[in-house]
Image 1 (cartoon, helix red, strand yellow):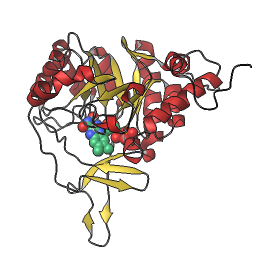
Image 2 (cartoon, rainbow, N blue to C red; image 1 turned 90 degrees about the horizontal axis):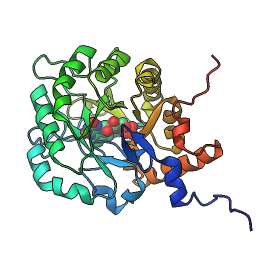
Image 3 (tube, rainbow, N blue to C red; image 1 turned 90 degrees about the vertical axis):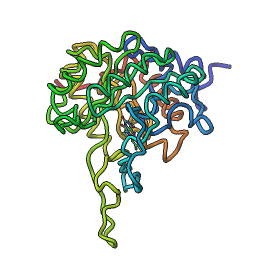
Length: 324
Ligand SMILES: Cc1cc2nc3c(=O)[nH]c(=O)nc-3n(C[C@H](O)[C@H](O)[C@H](O)COP(=O)(O)O)c2cc1C
């Protein structure tokens, strides 16, 4: 009997050789990562999702001090996604390091620590805590936070981004530094360039998009904070364009990998990010709709790589065909 077609999926060993990806020296078994703030601190999704089949998990964003976050409602459903204004609710870096740090090594996938702050000093303190947790090989710096001195978000301009990263970079000796950009800038290519100049190892593109919703019967905003961040299918084509622009504009030439995030619900969405130049993708909103969807996306990608006649997904990174 000849080889069976992979009608029921690609065998495990083959799947990992097709899908393994390299983010600045950190090799993931596949490119599907659980996005910050959508999958708990570490392995809370393990009851419903086999984490050994996932490329990596990003922790909830950790700040210098514990934060209760915003009042409810802080997460709501919209027609094509979700709106959230969670307000970075988290236990703070001291408790995270003490209580959860020792558990990181037991999580059956790579754990990347998300760090947030409201001042340069905040980010430096949380980065230092992550650096001390040996089982964390990389941090993802969430740049969508307002700087208390000045009020502007760190992601707004290349100058602000450079200012922050020049202080955080030296704190991380062992950990890789990934930076999660925000779409809330007029110059994402310029901000990405400043991050690369400051020595970041990978770029995550991008965070949520400012948005709001109103209950027309009560005439009140549906989120307690009025506005929040939009995620899910609605944002995918916008995030895809940002990945394409940053890949073409600065990242490809500098050899800095991109992680695409925004509305990955099906393997096709992930494949689009890969073709636009991403080496990995993250999923957030999809986990709320179906916690097992990341596994299905990985399987779909493996079948796609084979159909494309490639030995590895890496051959398809940035492989979008253009007429020019
Ligand atoms: C409920 C919720 C909480 C989030 N919390 C964080 C967070 O703590 N840090 C962060 O960098 N991004 C956070 N995000 C943004 C996600 O990581 C992701 O960038 C965004 O949801 C877009 O991806 P998606 O369309 O796959 O959900 C959060 C998103 C949601 C929906």
